[in-house]
Length: 127
Image (cartoon, rainbow, N blue to C red; front, side, top):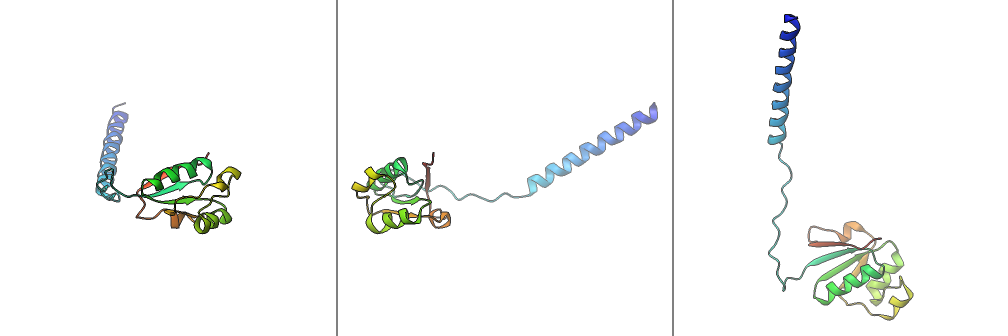
């Protein structure tokens, strides 16, 4: 019985020792540092990406663009992106075709082109 108690105490101490070692390793491993957020006020022009080029995404993109922000709409359809970029028209819905989009809205199907280090805000408008 004494032998078991002594063995149990040794195992308990070893476990505590290992837990402390793991804790030290976690603390010493530095996580990537995030950039400081820029100062933003009502006059700041942002780079905004809208995920989704349907009715809701287009409406949100238009509101942001009218406020002077640069907006990229991320869509799945290459023809839709081309129409937005070349004609400033979103052909996704019939009723949308009759409205010209602001010229500071562009579109792409490539997430790596849409979301860059310069992106300040992502709006998720996918159902």
